[in-house]
Image 1: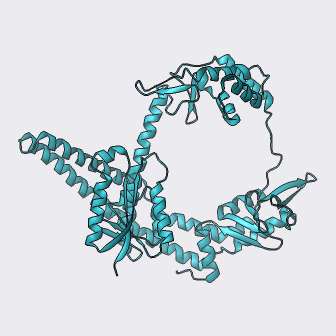
Image 2 (image 1 turned 90 degrees about the vertical axis):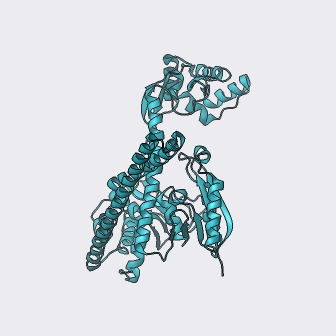
Image 3 (image 1 turned 180 degrees about the vertical axis):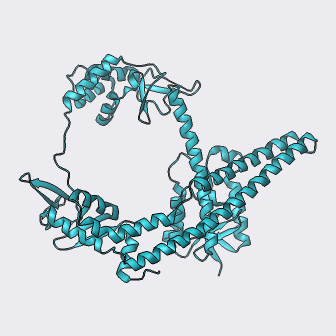
Length: 477
């Protein structure tokens, strides 16, 4: 019976689409691969996005397709960096049991692949992520440089517009007078935000949301400054109001908005959910002395009784007993972690040597082709095109080597600390005050439902796995 699968193609920008990385070219290669490997293609998924864009719509649709069609578990893609943008993408497909065919790299990655193949694939995922991170860093560098020059590196607020020809920010003659009028009126101290909005609608017909009004009136951009990455810069754009007017408006805000302080911090707030109606469990202080937790009652009267903080803390502590790891198991696991780290280091070393050989080969081709150009054996156009390709490949290899140097994860150390925490969690818990107990619980739990007698915890990863193993005593698995 012929295996069914899907095709996935992606370009990371319009520029790449123009420069030979086109979607049609990718799909042609993938279809040829499918035919030669006797895979029946049932659907195509195509993404065309930029490195700055978060999320990929068609990738998400592909994941949903696999979830709804358990009979199809194969995806064909050109190469690793076309499929993944982060390690989370890799884990999603791995959890679904998807078999990944990398047409250009000649690899097939599945749950049955050898550990070495999976390890090397993980390295390639890291390289893809490192390349994307580098693109993002370059974008952020450019935006930071613009900020240093006094040019706001984003979309300007109401009353301004981008001059795309001169790459500057200029006054919008249609909207600027409205912004100036807002400051003028609010600075008198005789207008609430609601009344200010109504007045502007009546005078200009412009509808501005109340929440946007407050943001607008507190934005120093209108007096010639702007804030970028937490730092204030003097902008090159023309101010719409004077510093005195801006300060007067801020003083009006301060007179209206007195700060509100929470009288007491509750140790277990935000952690608990009512098992009766799925409402959150909130807390309140009684007689300035006792803290009580109870259902918010958002969905009506609830059967959950009020619970004193001391009693609740004692009950929550029992949850940590369920993730205890015996000392002999801790020793066995840590030994396994060390062995895994040693194997990983060998793999990283081999990958580094492979990349260094590949780098030497690319540089050798660049040098030889330059000599051929000087000798008239190849044309100027061919030299420029090929050298550009090789230089790009050289840059990617250097990025990968840098990633191996700086981003080598010490998984054994992290895992060892997690096991140690699980082993001592209850011991630490009973010796701490409620505030510290709450912090410890929020490390281990993502949520916990509670009724009149029982607790129903949801453990964070990897404590959920430790809980299951502690329950079954199957530590070696």
